[in-house]
Amino acid sequence: MKYLHSMVRVHDLEASLRFYCEGLGLKEARRQDHPEGKFTLVFLVAEQSPDSEIELTYNWDSSEDYGSARNFGHLAFRVEDIYATCERLQAMGYTIHRPPRDGHMAFVRSPDSISVELLQEGRLPPREPWASMPNTGQW
Image (cartoon, rainbow, N blue to C red; front, top):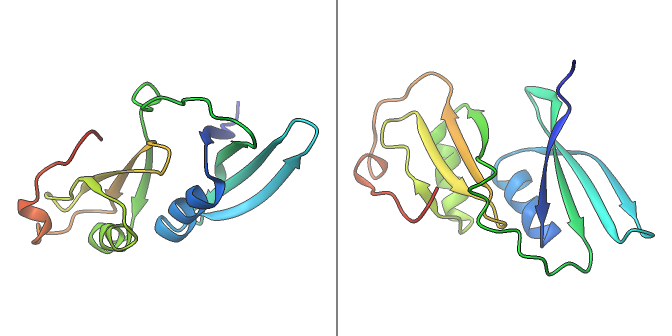
């Protein structure tokens, strides 16, 4: 058996690509437009694990409520510098819902409320302002 991908439905493909690609650093591996079914599939990969993909499914005319995504759980990524990653995402306007107080773990949400866990490769010493920052909302 080989793991292929996880799929998340998105309402705004460009906003989601900004989050996953510009914010997290994933790369678009391929895209499939299906005009007959009115949907687009975009497959994203992380540089260090190109065989494990995230499939963004964009249904062109959908106003379906995808819910809070708590039933999905979360996506997890190992990062080289959790503080730099959180600073970049925060500068882009994303809320760090669970700050990396311990220098190891943080949570942020995508534009479609998918919970994303960021895990530091190794551990960094606690650093302000993160060390004393409270949780915000759900993560």
